[in-house]
Amino acid sequence: MSEKLKDNYQQNIKKFQPKPPYFINCVKAFLVGGLICLIGQGIQNFYISVFDFSEKQAGNPTVATLILFAALLTGFGVYDKIGQFAGAGSAVPVTGFANSMTSAALEHRSEGLVLGVATNMFKLAGSVIVFGVVAAYVVGFLRYLFNMSFTG
Image 1 (cartoon, rainbow, N blue to C red):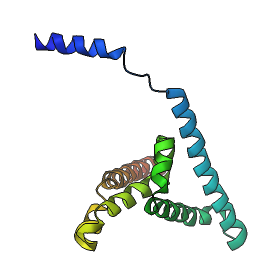
Image 2 (tube, helix red, strand yellow):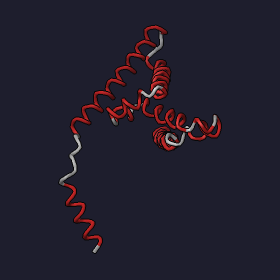
Image 3 (cartoon, rainbow, N blue to C red):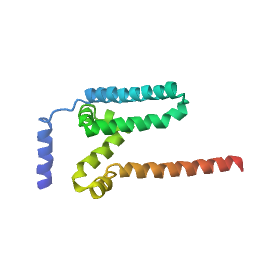
Image 4 (cartoon, helix red, strand yellow):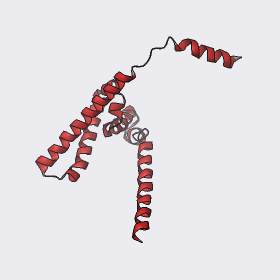
């Protein structure tokens, strides 16, 4: 009997719940994510033109600069406001990864440098790192097998 009441309750409240603005949320995410990528492209062009890097050489410093900017913005409380506005548009680029690590570190800073910041910094980002390492290993192994089958 309680399952039926629960189902009826869910159906009755559904008509009173506001519909999320999916289209507007997608536009916000697209614009902010695109702006982050545009800034990243500007930083990469800066490294190419000022330091005479090739496009490949400018990749790592560009990512490091974006991570630094995102960490600073998180520390000043700005990136959280960007995230509330843009949703996935701010979470998907590498800046979202930096935000997750920095916010976890800031949240636990009162517990000390080692037991607070260091141990909790990777709490949210740890699964991303593990998945990235495992995926890189699997793809590298498959590539190795693929190249072995064509060369020998």
